[in-house]
Image 1 (cartoon, rainbow over the protein chains, first blue to last red):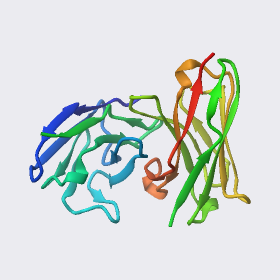
Image 2 (cartoon, each protein chain N blue to C red; image 1 turned 30 degrees about the horizontal axis):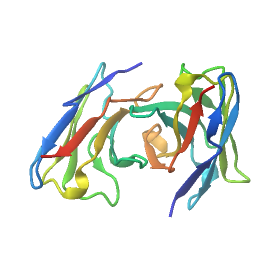
Image 3 (cartoon, rainbow over the protein chains, first blue to last red; image 1 turned 120 degrees about the vertical axis):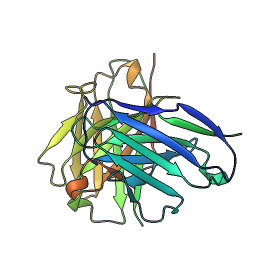
Image 4 (cartoon, one colour; image 1 turned 90 degrees about the vertical axis):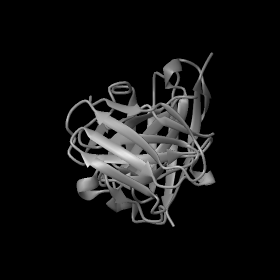
Length: 107
Length: 121
């Protein structure tokens, strides 16, 4: 199975900060990568698919980039509602796998 | 709007069985593949199983292969997960998720609210 490694595992930031989360795949996955946001007690929500395509309704401060093995999720200006856990996921091959998550906390 | 509502979770003893259901609405259920994804308490996400829109193909994680069976009833817009020989490590919130489809197959577009399965004696 393809392993995804996210960094950092946790991150403290302030409202208005620019934040970048990285996701590295153990082998090339082209652009078959998605990013999800999960708040406590809630289901994950799709933010980015195909590495860089913004899901409908997701604010434009979220952006994704990368291909092959290295990917990033960037939040350009953190808002209070963005404090959550973020997961990357590859859908290049079965089994689909997730990164371990990045917990974004308020500084 | 798309709605996915899971049910059937609960407490079951090791070795027992449980069947989860996921009622879908707001989209043409019979046109999309569907997944089950789980999350153990305080842990990350784990894909469990997938079924093609017409039920013709099914895939499973190695951790559940031979014990879990995914199925669907397109006439009832409902997805199922039959879980047998349950183990403590199957304890998790189970989510059903709609596949994005096409070349984006395997990407989870919408998720239900989840149902908790606890395997304990």
